[in-house]
Length: 362
Image 1 (tube, rainbow, N blue to C red):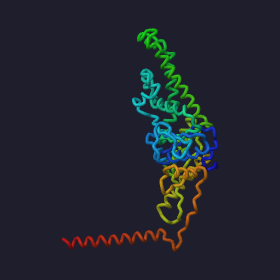
Image 2: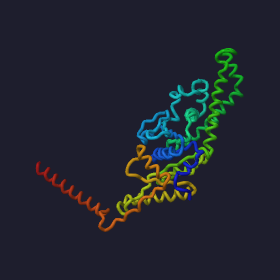
Image 3: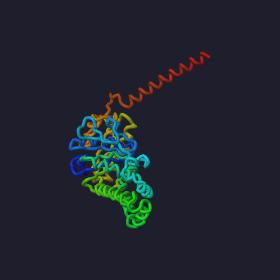
Image 4: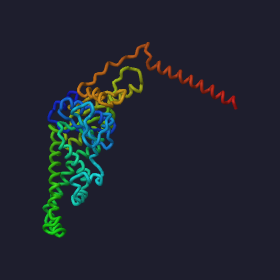
């Protein structure tokens, strides 16, 4: 069985892109933030970037982040930014090079999904110009993430189609631009300008696509909880990642209950049994994966000190103290129930007195 930690990610110095994703509500942001905190201890510079439209990075670090990289308080080499990789095309047009050309925008709009994909490409282009040794992606829930990871493929196909227009329609475009502005007119170079931009973007996209499919540069960390729906979603995610040829060999299971007392609560014991059933299935399905179990805590993990403490469990398996068995003299579940019954009886008695007083006052 593989080591139950994420130490393999820290040891793989060649890794550039680290995606963290899974079903909604399983602790992706906490896991990605914790991983980024640990990476900052072994890398020169780390960027954590949120691609979830419902950003939570600011909440996790208790610090406001924007679409430009911001240094995380308490660090000298950890930066964070929150971007929407699928903005409205009208809003995005002003800030994106390719959208400055109405012809290219119209052509792009004719290819399904290309608008979101090109917006993503623009984000990737910005990120690539920034000099970070590792980039951690805090992604949106599974469906959005799978679409995001497929954007390079969509873009490459779409832009290749646009490039094909150069050979099939080049003569016609030249004739049209000549009619618009004559041989030396302002529209004469329009096709070449447009296609030059497409070629430039296609080069960026192909480079990103190659890097995403290279296990030396890219890996995906699946995050889940020990419940049926999360297990099902994780299996779907792992299969889709295999189709996209994206490496994944780490699974973080959050919210695992480690009871400190045996026999204290029937509900708690039922949840532990349910979780163990699904934990066993994770181990059966992913026997060659690094599976990391993270404890369910009494409080939320927010702020750098909490993230530092919690992130230690990613590198060192959580080892809870052995659960204590309730003794005969312990104020355990039976005593608690007896106290609750006594309190309810007292409340009933009080309500009966109030009712009798109300009837007497009529």
